[in-house]
Image (cartoon, rainbow, N blue to C red):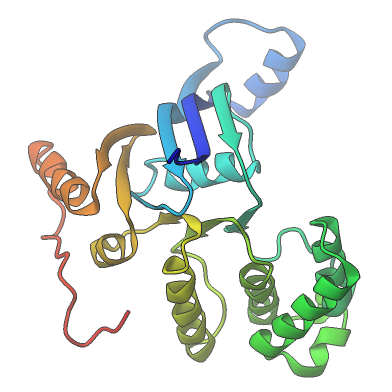
Length: 263
């Protein structure tokens, strides 16, 4: 049986220019020069990656290692400076909660247009809207313009849409906030169901417990470069040893499930 590759990255880099002074940006636009005004910064550098259908990839690394940039590249939110990305399937990023919503439209209208753009039929769209309203628990605000929503309500709606449109590929950034403690727990439970559903998932996390328990494989990023790839336990072990060699050790990582946590 041939295993379909849902996502392929070939020598992918994302480069930004860091200008020495604010005025150098304008000068470079008017009179380009090859050096002197800026330095190149690689958020992602020559990353190769194959993610097959049904795999859950854990992405671990310290702040600034390129984790969120990698998700944005796969989502198409930003484009690579070099290299190629091939994505086969419907991608839903849980990154910027409600980033594609229009503030003047009601919650209902935003959900309706969002699902319609994705190609769902009217009957499918109405079914999705019903499930979104039930999960989001924002009551009559579903018929109010989005600009009247609190940040928490907006996040609730966006998260509810993302998990109810049956994505083939899900991109998850652990640092996302989706509301109060009650809704966070409810959302976490739903996320665990999705992780076990056989969907293709890219999961950014600082938690070795979550990486080990939820992911089928993992990668470690450092300064935009992929330093390790393999089964989660091996990658987490390399992650710990890598920083020990840099004389900048991490707190002792535990990949065993504490008895008072239920996944």
